[in-house]
Amino acid sequence: MKKLNIGKEQLLVTLMLVSMVIWGISWSSAKVLSQYGSALSIAYIRFWLVVFALFPTLKLMKIDLNVSRKGIPYVLGAGFFLGFYSLMFFTGLQHGFAGAGGVLVTTLNPILAFLVGLLISRKAPQKIEYIGLALGVVAGSALLKVWDSFEVIFSTGNLYFVVAAFLWAVMSKISSKSTDFGHPLTFSFWLHVLVSVGMSFMVDFQEVGSILQNGDRLFWMNILYFGIINSTFATCTYLFATTQIGAEKASTYIFLVPAGAMLSSWFFLDETIEWYTLLGGFLGIMAVFVINGKFSRRAAVRRA
Image 1 (cartoon, one colour):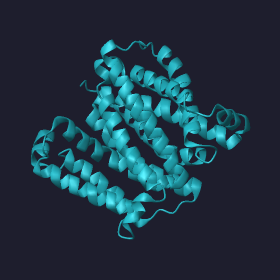
Image 2 (spheres, helix red, strand yellow):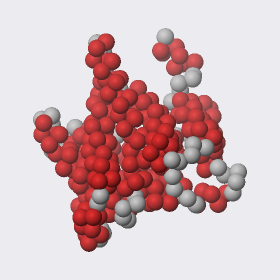
Image 3 (tube, helix red, strand yellow):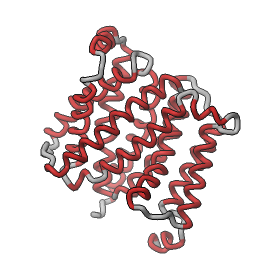
């Protein structure tokens, strides 16, 4: 990985911080959008908006639109899980809270991705990884507030968020192979095209037309924010950062997303930030650090 000079590194760090704030606010934006129609219709509009935003972006950056033939199964697989994730995402927001959902999903994502990786590789966790997984279970329990009632998992959108986190974890594992078959942004473009076309066979076009025709200023502000600023600028910045500083270091910035989700839901939606949400989010971050060996002696020696 090439070393950046101080000026470029500072610029990249600034752009990454801005991008994570954008991702955090997107939860409140999506919560607003979920009130304008069904999850399928809102997701459908959002996916086509991303397609129309990514196409000129790829052209301006002179990125090849071709994906190798071997990459097609990965596009199909990732597209299926991305589409299903979006349905769970918006449905959960229709029943739950943006702040809690943002913390729950972004905390569980890396933990579930690790578990999916273990299942695929058929490897047993190491001792330190067991500790991390245990922290992850405690974090998830705190976020779901299971001490009140086990049934809370199946209420207020939490079940949708848990399923969404799992689907995103699987999709991420599939998408991680994208660089083997083309540029990551090209893979993302065809991914959104596939999901958009696939949803065309299920969506109610009359409802979509009604949403677009009757959408007020608040709707258009949020759909443009969620579809363009969030899905194009922030995501492109993140993918670029992975090529400059590495995926592992870039992924640590995602830990800022839960805080952004909570603060934006409190500021824009007047949602209350509960103590157990803060506790669960903190424990989840600790779990991810432990699983990735951040606190191991070997990792400390490598950094030294």
